[in-house]
Image (tube, rainbow, N blue to C red; front, side):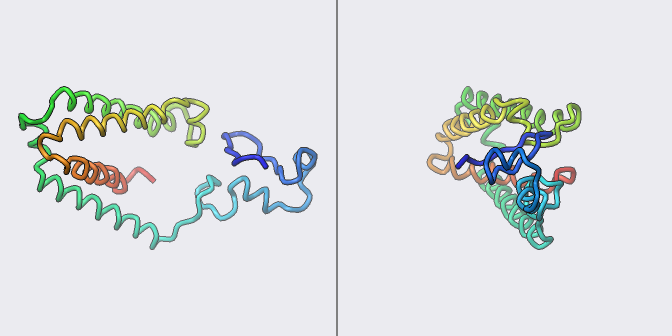
Length: 185
């Protein structure tokens, strides 16, 4: 049995339920199987394969996002994060600068994937990233992990074992704040 099949935009979807002979022959009966392989059944976003979400589910997602954003704001206020990063002498500055460079690289790569490819190159489907730019997402993951480790290490003299918790809550708040950007779906 073959593994999961990942479609590339513009590629034909073939029903492989009956082997190679069935794939070459025209579909005679089970059109729902071909529709489900194509991602057309039960979707609202043009066949990408995600089920339709109800308004209450979307509202619940926004509520969870708001909880994380408020939690991050409280953590930032209580830990005095901006002042610590800017003025505290206990912060290890070279590690902080290296982490900020990696975060900047990740920001540029996100803008490349989210703005440049869809708006300028016309690549709308994110599954094409594996074909068009296969090393961007793994590179972003590596840069993000290294930046997180560097940030935790550079603030360890200030907050100690609370550094991962403080920075993690702030990172989740920043991530979930994207729920409230109006031009993102």
